[in-house]
Image 1 (tube, rainbow, N blue to C red):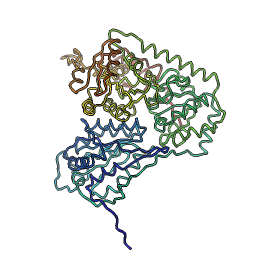
Image 2 (image 1 turned 45 degrees about the vertical axis):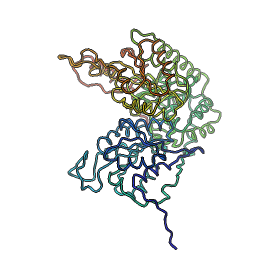
Image 3 (image 1 turned 180 degrees about the vertical axis):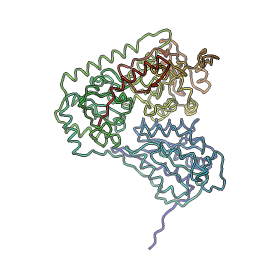
Image 4 (image 1 turned 90 degrees about the horizontal axis):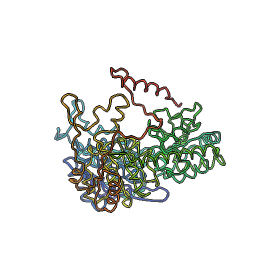
Length: 625
């Protein structure tokens, strides 16, 4: 007897969109759609394929129109981050510049371990039309396009030359996207003629599919060893990273901390793992860390990294941990990260692993005086934060004061978002996080331009929360186009633009390496001395208003507080608050260090002095094997 397979005749693009609309994820018994929609800008490389399919299946898969292809990827990964990687978007573009505009977004996603599906148009598979508009030609191969540049920044990459290849490519792509350990950018390159080709697809391909998100456990013997190391330690310290949030382990972490009395330092991605005022939460750790977190890190005899990849900011360029006998235990879903720092690797889900480790350590608890020391550090730091919040700097506001006013006047469940410049360091130290979802920093790639698009993505992920985007003038000028998209979608995000007349963060870094802020200020070109003329007359308020935002300008503390109050009442469009800040008034580094190489030879005495300081600081660096 023969069996006839039920098929559905669709174009490749139609089959792709229909398949994506039927994908679900499930963790801890909770199920939800994986793709919230598709972002896209159409061109000749995708308008007749993906564009037509999105129009045909509009009821199954929402389409969102962006203004910049990079921005749409940022919005997608911000959405995925806020959703703890359980939902995301697909992003489509035409071939050529539309595709490569998404490249920065792909790198941002993969570096931050966040899922996003990229669908760039590609060359004609038939090739007879070549060279088509926007084609990169190679005299050595006809099997290459600009989309090959996505390979090193994608966790999975494929080019589909035939419509039936979709049948095997899509499950492979979803396996990676939904994997807690392997996720990142996934790129499927779609030749524009293949997008429009029809095929009799198996109807089973479009049955709803649920991808189970597992909570894998580490090896039992390694867990037992980790428990013994903990019981033997006198000055342990937890480094809480983004994996605490992604595995929804904040409650498990708090229970473990209160059981054992182990203090916690937070990475950028891990901030909010504990409430800011918990007596064992030392706050930020590393190059942008607090004094207490960094003092305890230097003396720690055991460091337990939970969901962290140990970036150079977290390790203060490998100067943070100075105890000669220090050992590391890493709880991480990704083996690559679990083995870092020569650690005992507990490769598994953070929440599940913490629960098992808590049972194994039994009655172990750090000494009362050690916990008291951590609590004193926490209280002293909170007093320092309050001092910076109320600095009353004149004539211009300081950046720390602006952070303080936003934090004070926002609600605990509100979200602050940032990515680049000097703001991330100040926010890491100063923001009092009261809700685990209240702090959203993209600091794996620290991508200038992420902020406004990212804020839109968070608002779409959680419409009930107020979202505050804090952005310097440099990042604002790089990418503010999605203000228009927020107007179109009637999304309320409060965007706080800090006008400090240039690249203030790198200006400060330039001074620290002896270069006196060269090339970092927004000034007219002087005929003799370069960019040293009068400040450029950039009207940020007019810029934002022209894009459709409600605009408020604030110069003084009362002005700024009034602006925050007025902004909260507006709910149908973005609000931009423009304030000028003093780039010279900075928050201290508090004994931390970050390695930036200084010129080994120079005629400038300032550079020579900076090199001496650099050489001295490098002496503290360690290999942890």
